[in-house]
Image 1 (cartoon, rainbow, N blue to C red):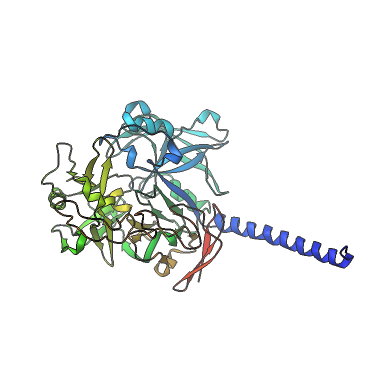
Image 2 (tube, rainbow, N blue to C red):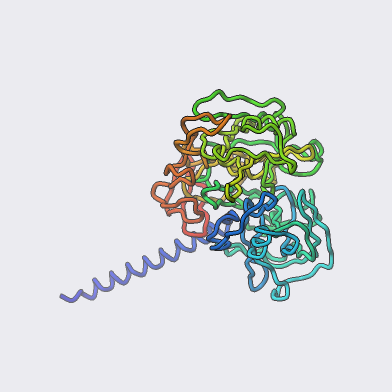
Length: 488
């Protein structure tokens, strides 16, 4: 029987309402993303899905591109995609390294990371000034320009951002996005983080970093927000040591570390190393963790090595990567446990070579990527605090912060897991012993956990819609490429 006119009218009315509601939901999701929170995936250089399908270059220890961490920016008009290395230890953005000054896998990676052609951008403005940038390893001579920078998954396009284009470089395999302190501290102009805040890309001048485990090969950086599916427990505040009181008198993310200890697998007796109550700065641009020689030697001794080789590396038994022990970094109120696997650098070859992710140094004391992979860190540049927790992975729920004052109440959604911990591992050599694992992932793979109801493993920006509540805080999940909001 044909439907009556009134029934047809009702159906049309309902369809119209549903369409308007769907449009409103999309608009709300975009608004939530555009107002205060922008997130980008952090891509490990070993991630073949992003950089190459045939990365068969034999890696040497001198090469660094195999363990660096990248985000993609789109620069200019029309946008040109360029991968840049994320560096909390520096302050400026620059692109276009000279790939001929590096060799092997570093050169291969350099050529695949993308280049910015200034001649193709209609919005570029040359400032006519130059500078030499020097790093712990490598340098770059840059010419300053301004241009538009857009960010993947966001309609935010930052206008007239100042950055450098390299005219020459040495021993660098990618451009660098320095995300440390900017204007008024280390630069005479607003850097990338300053511009995100000034142009209302974020409500707070803060960002969170989750590098992701070696197995996950992907992490997330959230500008102006947090991702509660990337850590366990609450966040602990560590005041940044003022530059005038810091070891190098430079405005960096220096914090006080109380101790470093080791927890062998199999329930062996843990111990704390003498001389480990020291200030350290957090540096995502450094592959290794650098410690005073006496302290580094003491830790290496527990991995069966008495002293470093001629290049300053501790070569150890690769069996430690299958062990469940942890190296424990204690701060006021929190201890970050780094699984042996995450603390060890594995260099492919026949046979594979393994090196402790710690080097002796009398010049710098810093916690690099071998530490940061196991930590979830919030860098608050307004209030000069670093907030920290044990890293974990149970999905993806990036959410905007209305204020840095919200951070004490934010709690991670993940259970008591240690990212990268080896499930059911046996022992390997002098320090390792044998026995049970420490932590482990939710799916038993030693990599990223799988969040119930989301189907996400180590991904970013794919959280399911809905509300997830934890200790009075709710995160509104939204669609691909967008951020939710923290609801109190």
